[in-house]
Length: 216
Image (cartoon, rainbow, N blue to C red; front, side, top):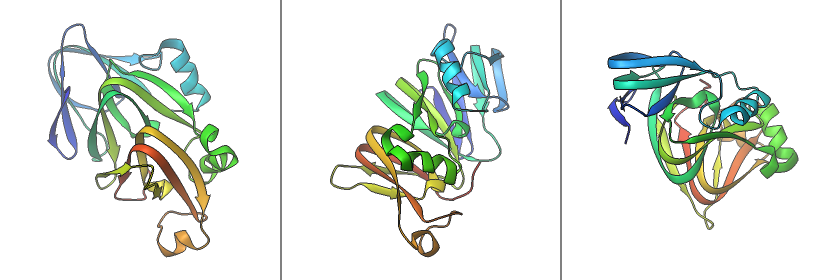
């Protein structure tokens, strides 16, 4: 596991020779050892196609490549940090939620509208989240940011989950998503702005929800 949680807002990563990590620019708080930080122009592991995918997705979260030998502390904006360990599956996460992730993971993009159809496109327009979302696949760890901490909620075929889109952070597993409406839902139980939309996730996996409806 490359991350050690120092507290709820700071994680520490051990960097070994021949390995690399990617982090959001400006996320380094302190480091020890012989560690280098260089701007990443290829979108993380995944090369040029990953970079193109990020640009098509209009993602503006630049990355740094972290290499060398030593330890690095990461944090950003005082946000709470959640470490998610992947064991071969794929994590879908909003790009601006990424703090740092293992260089062994392959990065790409997924068109959210492909699962939700027209409503998936509405999701991007209404909730402020992109039509595309970042994917990280493989074996490794990911540190994501959130307001007020993160709750992991299991998703099973018998128990789909409905989430306020403003509180959504990430999900993984064999999960389908769609945006649905419920007249009066947001006025009564949701706290985000806009119309009464909720994100429905079904299948097998888990969704990560922050304890706030604030954007980063």
